[in-house]
Amino acid sequence: MTENEILSIISETNVYQKIKELKRIYQELEERQKVFCSTFDVHCLDGCGNCCLVFTPDIKMVEAYFIAYGLIINGRDKEVLEILANYDKDKKTCPLYLYNNKYHCSIYDYRPLVCRLFGSSITKDKDNNPAYRNCKWKDDNSLTKEELNLKKEALVFMSDYGQRLQEIDPQDTKTEILEVALTKAINVLNYILELEKKTS
Ligand code: SF4
Image 1: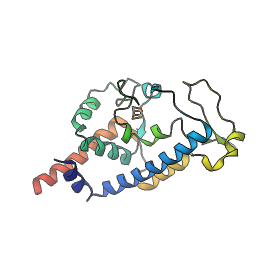
Image 2: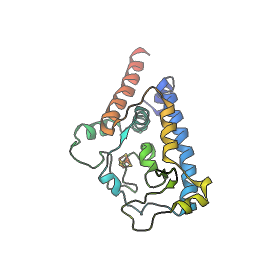
Image 3: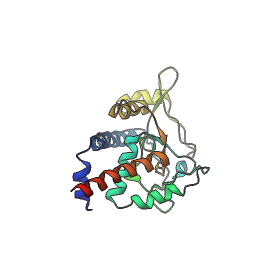
Image 4: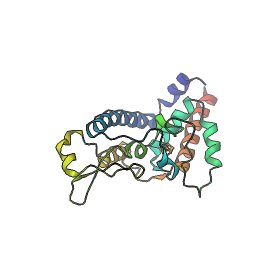
């Protein structure tokens, strides 16, 4: 099936409307993070990827569908299903970590929200002041609330994007570990595509 055929089937579904909304949020986030990072000189260490070595995200189904969609249109869904099926659940490393890749993520363009926010966004402290927690792999100083408050318009708050993600599907309040949610999402999208093939 070509990418256009896949798109024309999936674009009829409710899932696709949610994927489209998520993509719009990610694009906006990317623009705002460029401003945030250049304003405060925040950046990951070149070729680091250490966070993915000790972390597997919990994600929402809409995030899983977006990754699954990306994998299917790129013909990588079977390969990733196999990786997920053989993944050692006691390992801390994300199953999608890839050493031999610039970003160390095998689904970088489709990665979940938390992976986009980590290191390039702001939280709030107990007094509601902006707080930036520096990544533990870097030894430069964290930004103070005074520095952050000087350029409030450039701040990107993690909680705002968590809220936007929740609003895409307000009924779906759960998250699941990436390998579980992504396996389900790939299987659901492939089921929709198979069904269409049989009925057309
Ligand atoms: S999905 Fe990608 S960016 Fe996120 S933890 Fe896994 S390897 Fe890292």
